[in-house]
Length: 227
View 1: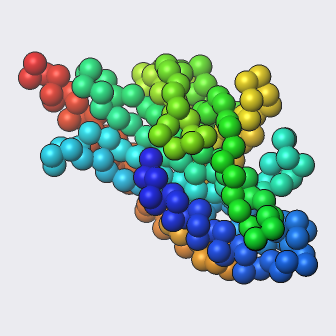
View 2: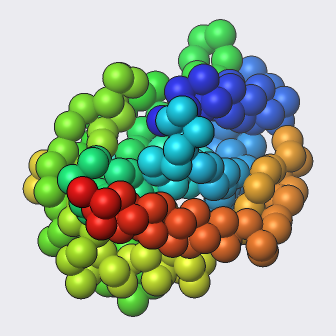
C-alpha cells in the first residue's frame, strides 16, 4: 500500500492543519483548518514490477473529507490504493485498499486515529459500483486498513474501469457491518496539495492507469498463450 508514503502524507497533513489551529480554538479551529485541505490531496499512478516485469498497476490516493454519516461532519483522512494485479492465473484481479484516520484535537495538538472500516468498494456519479463483483476481503498489514479483491471480468467492474478513465470515481466504505456507506470522490488529476490547500493538477495523469492496465492485460494474455 506504500505505507511509508502514506505515513509521510498523513504526517504532513497534520503539520499543515496544525499551522492553522491555535490551542484556544480547539475543535472549531480544527474544522476550519481541515476545510482548507478538504478534497483530494494527492493521486499517484504507479507501475508495479518484479524483476523488471510488470505485474500490477496501482493508483495511490489520499483525501480529506467530512464524515456526516457517523461523526457529525468531523474531518477524517482517507488513504489507500486501487488497481489491477496479476495473480498468475491467466486473469488479473482488481483490488481496493483503504484506511481511514479520524482527525482529533488532543491535549498536545492535532492527531489522527485509525478507524475500523468495512465493505470498501468503488462507485461512479451514477451510483454504479463494483460491490457485487467482490471476491474476497482481508486485513492489511496496516492497523485498520482493509483490502478487497474484485472479479475484473464482472460487468459492474468493467463499468468502474470506465469511470476511472473518465475521472468519475468515489471510494465507498462503512464504519461497521450493515452501516450506511460513506462515499469520498477522488479527483484522478490531482498530483499534490500545498499546505494552503491549493491543488496541483495534471490531466494527463488520468491516462497513466489505463495505459498501464492495457499493457498488463496484454502481457498476461501473452504469457497464457505460451503455456
